[in-house]
Length: 266
Ligand SMILES: Nc1ncnc2c1ncn2[C@@H]1O[C@H](COP(=O)(O)OP(=O)(O)O)[C@@H](O)[C@H]1O
Ligand SMILES: [Mg+2]
Image (cartoon, rainbow, N blue to C red; front, side, top):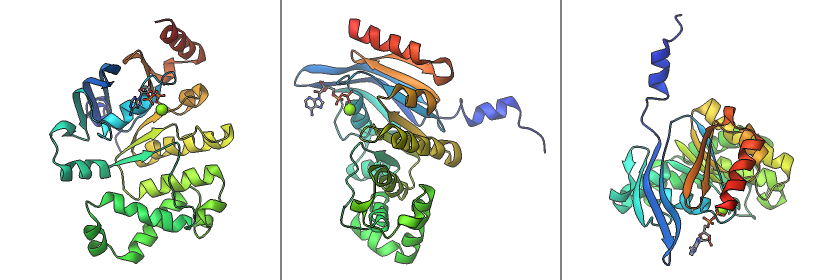
């Protein structure tokens, strides 16, 4: 077989429509500005890390992208849709294609890992009736098992979630999110309440979804070594703006520390 021409390879990546395009995004809380005009776009199939000091607005940005918080101004184009213009129903549909991983995972502790993952299917439906009518329980269960296997927990499927370790629980939460069949994953410090080794496993799992399943990822992490190891690109948020935008291959611990030092001095 012929190798693809460089231009064809480009058409599949850099020239493809961004999964996310943000223009002039602003957010203020009670008149106090947090985001002051963000402009950036993410190419599909990439892992982007978002860094910034505590309180710099990283979580606010993530929530503004899916309108869990309403932006004060600016435009967000997510998976080809203008987020400002959507009906409530269309907004639910876009959200169904975006998997979110939180620092705290909100699993139901008394239920098994499998039951928790099965419930994730509801997030890809636009209403409870659609889910009850259109899905065969056996197929949903099979898919949930496959999602648990994807995160390395097939053998823990029937175990109650509250008897799993913190890292295993976070992986169950990722399996539940995969039931949405997302195209794009937003992760807000998924490694923050885990020990360094387990946190690293979770970051590695997320990057694997990008590399092996072709998903796109925007992940917040405050661990610089994770940022450097598990991303393609690093965005830095300081003083309400993106002040760092670097391919990870060109970043290092010193350049990231410099970013934080500048952020503090400004
Ligand atoms: N719902 C809210 N109401 C008022 N202020 C908020 C709200 N959410 C966040 N903030 C403020 O916005 C700033 C950015 O917060 P956040 O986005 O959580 O930062 P980060 O995730 O980077 O630590 C902080 O000063 C925080 O106190
Ligand atoms: Mg935060």
